[in-house]
Image (cartoon, rainbow, N blue to C red; front, side):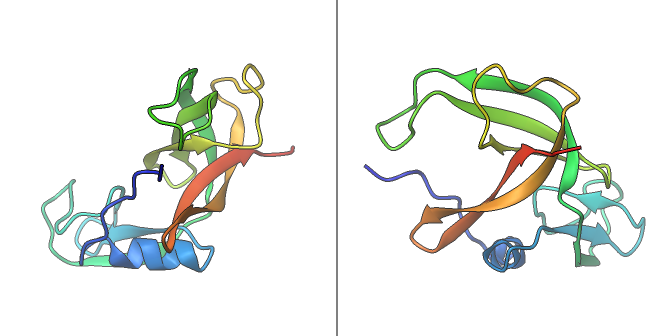
Length: 132
């Protein structure tokens, strides 16, 4: 059984292309200068239509997490973390925490992005605990 693949649209394609290159990029509004995630056709803050793609650090802190004890199918080996990450640039992302045993993570822990092959040409940004 295969994992669910994220939809790739004209709007989101630059995000996925950057992930394939090992780079995390977010949209930045030319009107209000704010960043946003997930990719959209207009700015979620001011409604501006001029959005550019900008590389970001990929560093942040865990805002919240849950440990999934039973995967939704055999394609998802449990247990695994589903996390909310507050990036240094002020954007919150939902993702996975990898290279971490259940019970190791805590809210506020520093994390950094990695890129994981999800199959069929998709590469997803995931996070790991950052050594400090």
